[in-house]
Image: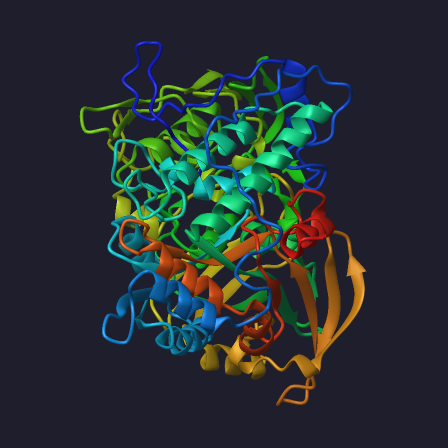
Length: 630
């Protein structure tokens, strides 16, 4: 989702987001990386492949700073208030000189409980913490504008590689509002931030090592492993970001539902037609939805809207049912050039849009990607511009003027030209933001007047090629959402007749709705979850563990699925505002084992690294050995 755009010049293009990546050579090495991209645990940011020819390994080690840690430095599953107080007093703080810290978090009773515990501990270390919460869109906007100090967010893998996580802390990628389209963590790790400049330079150099050695030689693989691990220690040194936990995602359903639960990429990558094979006694799936903002793929802003986009639309590729293996969805084949800076995609013939919009062609694909990159309605522009790096032109204000790197070769072939070699394009093309819509359906990019007004398309008449067609959406808490099965779906009609969701925001109300069997499938809020009622059974491919939960208050026992998702939830800081001693004090008082056990009720594991265990060098064992010092 967020890769580091860096300014560089070349080719005479007016383009402020060309990245400062070293140009890779060695076509076979890069091609092997794409070919093996479904193997998410083979090495640090690499993949399997047969006898590739490698690019020269880039060491990138020139900064004076080098990390020197035996293990995680702020205490492993300990509450070290005395150390927090000491670091603050050494910085000149005390009873008469307290630091006032503003904490901003997502609206969540669970996180509020954790924040209150942290606040009580920090009070003993001369820090007065004010807790504020916001909905997801407000949280993102506030932190994007830099109007924050401490904040909480989570990162779910867009593609299962260390690079996807480590770009969050590449310093240039954390600075919003500049000439480059930043999309990392909202750390504002500027040159004049409250941090050692040598650590900042070190993080930049290590990220370049990570992305500039894509080959499969032992040297290249080890270089990537070392670079990612070094960046983890740079995070420890700076305390710019404090990993808290990796999530255990759970879903629950009644016996009447024939359900295939999602894998480690989570339900946000799951299509209902792949997950639901039938429901005894009825034809429509009843569910619960959070509030959401839009049904336009390029403006989808949260998990709830993303789930609707997954069902109404199709992207070129897919993580089928949330598993880490990439499958073709709208494409049938692809080719690349030697350095993976150009992808030629062949699309299926005969794919039909909903309604009377007819067959999907390459022109529809080009229009859809242009909207993602160019439209003022797009809130997901970074997918195309920063992550994938499609070549583009900008205007005098730095706004994307035209995505020049997407073109139709013929009726069913599209060519993507990227600013730099990128081996994970097929992963990125799974994003719902790349979903295909009919050419010219709205007039929000140059050259199109639009078949309908934008508000109609985004709220009451979304048209795609997905397995379900839109029926209605009554927005807001207490509202509803419905979609019908698309009988002409190119991958076969869904097994159910449709989907009916009730929009409920309150956790207790959501739980009671499921308890009353009004929903076939739901999550159970942490505040209502009782670990003693859960039992585990069979393990499915992809690490999904089936089980049961109950009996609940209605005397029913439901089915369950648990999977360790590829994610990390963290506390971050605006480094231009929050001094390093305050950040370190926070790190000292976060007791992960206690929070996961008592606050999150065991639904996760403590996080000592930004990379989840599935992606860390040498997997779970390497993860543990590094932070434990073994």
